[in-house]
Image 1 (cartoon, rainbow, N blue to C red):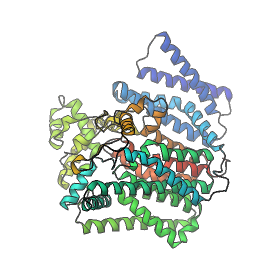
Image 2: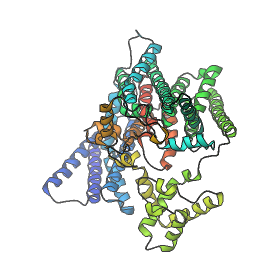
Image 3: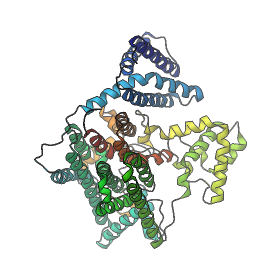
Image 4: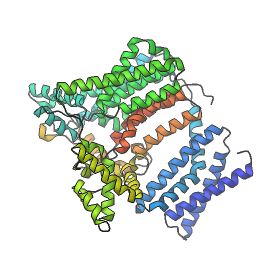
Length: 580
């Protein structure tokens, strides 16, 4: 905006809208202290908003103001849901108004952060070490830093899925509810341990190999950042996170599918960045075969990962020139064909069935469950029908669909159709309640101060639940006291009793929403520079994440693709010239 007076008037008006909406949301107050806080908030929003509206780069101003408005509105909505629950259309409009009003001020802060990142020195090293040396050294360092966590939880951490997976191995009745390839690998190592006289030995070997694969993938990421000349600060921050951030270590020693999946995702992301920078690589059969093999394995380790490949294909077609688009289509579609062929072959070889239909109705179950909770007395006929299709509907809890969708009557196509018809009919009468149910079920992905994701299954030092699952499958011989009881007790306090939430500032690193917003920040920065290659690169983890918005709950391991990929994507985006 070229008119300074008009700019500051607009900033003041938007600040007033934001403060007014927030005051209405929280009831307002006439106490002197709170009045001072509202006045201070108005002044800060006006000052920052005026600066945001004055940004010379129009594209940067629009991108970061839009992201700032979205972030601010999301935090207002999260606060409202947390403090006193949903307030209908009025509450939604007030949250939207708060977001729009805070947009210029938040955009100013985000734009300043992006300019600071763009000003970082762009070379990661001085040439005395090769990318290969950096890769090997980083991988070794990361693996060594994870070893104490493995020793503390020896032979490894067992998630709840292991009982289902081993039951399939013992019975020979396989499904693809958990990725079939992962079940077969886990079962093979467990059987190996049984052959050696103790299943824990085979299980420990499984965990050690997973750690090595993940450390190698993150080492490859560090080597790639070194090769392309990423900023030193990004390089060392990424290395510190990979080696020391407890989420990496805990998931590396856990038997969930997330470890192998994210390791493969990182390797595919590196290859995707290479071909975006040098489309001639698409003509090399070895590169294409390696990309397709890694991509197919990645999809086989998470059932919804193919969405990431499809979104990356769409974004890649925009990013690449016309001459390379046909080859990119062939590569990505070939990856999906290889995935489907390999998965189909495995399912045929082991006579495995598909995923359970109940996995597809998480959101619908939550929405009808919330309607039942609030309207079962005023609308008994519909709610009685809801209870017929959802037998456990009285167990509704806002933050996880597991108690409801697990028992939904959708085991046959005609029953699924009947369930969906009821869902649609009820939703026409209660659209706001349906939206509320979805927001509550996903708030951990966008509300930075959310803590519900850390107690989905419970919390407490003796529960091994909380933020990160840390239990061991005693029923199948995988429990032990470990070798570092002090470290284990510390981790139990931090991540089972959730005491990490008491750590100022650093606790924010553990919020799933932070990593979602960091990915959005990287996307906004790339958009303001018209950096289509970074946007295409980001499309791969975003595509893997989007289906989780329709999932049963929010857990940090569901956001793990962003935790692993955001430092790599930022390094790739900032490695190029600094001029916007």
